[in-house]
Every structure is written in C-alpha cells, then in structure tokens.
Image 1 (spheres, one colour):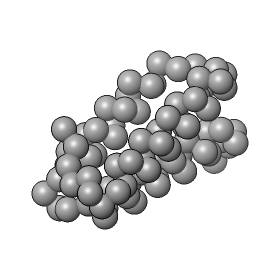
Image 2 (cartoon, rainbow, N blue to C red):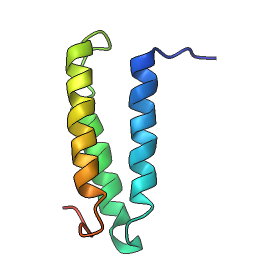
Image 3 (cartoon, rainbow, N blue to C red):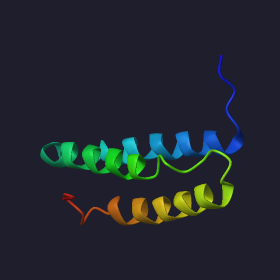
Amino acid sequence: MVRYSGLQREVLAFYRQCVREIRKKPQESRHNFVLFLRAQFQQSSHVSKTDFGAIEYLLRRGRNQLEIYSSDSVRNVG
C-alpha cells in the first residue's frame, strides 16, 4: 500500500472534491468540466513533489477556481 504525504493527500482530496462538484453540473456540460479539470492538473504535473511552496500555491489557486466554478450560475466551461 502506498503511503502518501500530507500534501499529496490534500491534492488527492482536492481532486475528489472537484469531481464531486462536476457531478452537480448539468449532464450536457459535465464532459467539458472533466476535460478542464484534467487539463488544469496536467498543466501542473511538471511541479516537483518537493516544491511545497508551488504545490500550496496551486492548491490555493485551485480552491479559488473551484469556488467560482461551483456556483450555480456557471453552467459550462470552455
């Protein structure tokens, strides 16, 4: 069994939270949200596991984006 660091667990929990929010969106736009989520995480995949400052910054930025996109007024992303 893999043992994750606290920061790794935080990133995984954030990803799961994003997926849960996507499930609340209209069926016809969920695919776009999934693609957007994957693209955002892939853009950040170059960050080293030991670059804690960058990871924490990306988590903060991601949480702010999630707060915006989880609003009921946001119906699609593109």
